[in-house]
Image (tube, rainbow, N blue to C red):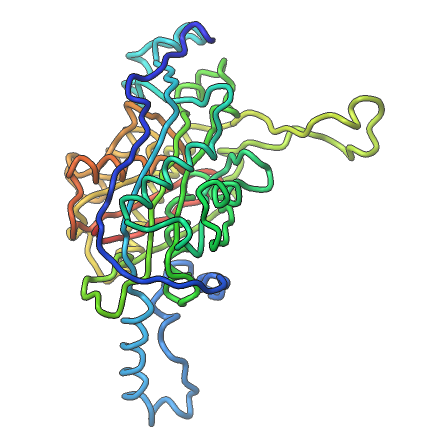
Length: 409
């Protein structure tokens, strides 16, 4: 394989800024996200801000509660998106390279997926390294120092350490005052990370949050399986979210959200542990063998049908949560899995093709890294501008799917 692994001329490390507005600082211990406390709904965030009242007191205090509720919502829901950054490995694997491994060609792959290249980690490189590049870029553009962060959420299904990579990232960038944890939701991970960060900010538990999405799924690809090896690459992106200051009159950045899961669909896309039995009872060298996972298994047709059905629905729910209509969406930044999925979802939503961000041709499917990579490119190019309403939507293994409606800048 070494003969056809190429180095990119540009390195594809992204150091781009979303915007430079916003205020707020301070540290506090992170609490459980508000959405974990709700029993029936994953997507309604506004109800958590309204003060509770007993039936006996509701009639005599409704006016007071309405006033307090509006004040609470104004204070708790306001947050800003300040910076974005991304990175991908310099090593590139083209469709022509894959044609030397499996029975395929550039035309076959590109017409069915939209993918022509993918970036893959080389020896000595790590996902944490990509996360560091992405995070420092986002922080620099946001004008925030690493030590100002109080929370880091790293969405990934392929950490360098089985116990998670968020703490490695926290230490490497010098975010000494931040708590860090990993969030595993596959290709929906970055969107769920944004929603989770929003809940921490709304409750006042955190003021400055770094949300990272990245994966290195090339580690779990069977490079002789034409059904999966043509799809996946490695990449990472990061975004800074902060609480808005009291003197900041800009509208809230997180307008609405929705997220769902259905474990019954796990058979359609998975990467299972490869061990068997009780390891302690194995005989000989097997008892000291290394733990490992199988390669990715995917039923492409089932995942396609799931995506084109579920993504428009979850975007509609996020819009309802925001009290908005789909005509108010300026841009769709969706998980980059397949160009035909992007086109189908855009058609169902009635969005013009030139308002759907796609970087599939260059990066392929980078799982949790795909949305921040695409968002970063769109902001840097000037496509997404201050005040634009952006629908972020992810879907993937689990099965999981999620959407967040955000206002940029």
